[in-house]
Image 1 (cartoon, rainbow, N blue to C red):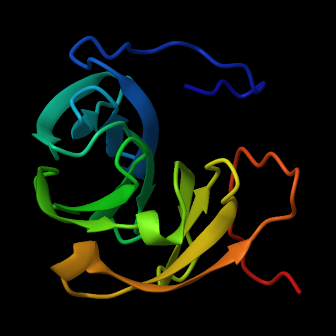
Image 2 (cartoon, rainbow, N blue to C red):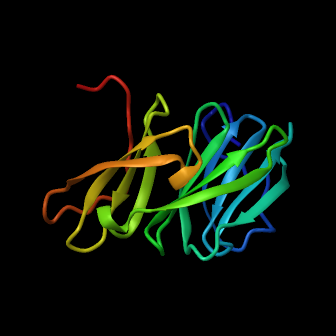
Length: 176
């Protein structure tokens, strides 16, 4: 919880997660957690007091190291980046907050060791930062309404300068 003065206050701790890695709020009443050890994702209801109540946990095994996460702004879909298997998994989010694994899309042909993912503000493109040695780049994917290939279509990759050490990815609207 963020206090009016900007300080953080611990409201609740996840006790049912084996390896929580990243979180994405869906709205003020729900959040999704990527769990590297499950592997997969879990959904939680957020109470008025900031407490968290588990809704569902869904494994995407045999994928490994579910780390980074990006949710559509309309709260209907979330993607998890599986760093250990160079892939992306798509989950749909039900009206009750439950998750349903739709499929997984292999991305190793476009780079290894996905380190971060981000959706553009219009939910049309997903970008995957790959930091594997000798193959650093940003992989662009078009978001489709299909569940095939985890709702993604590969566009291509742009390489990053030699010697760079990126650790995060932000996609913003209106930059020129």
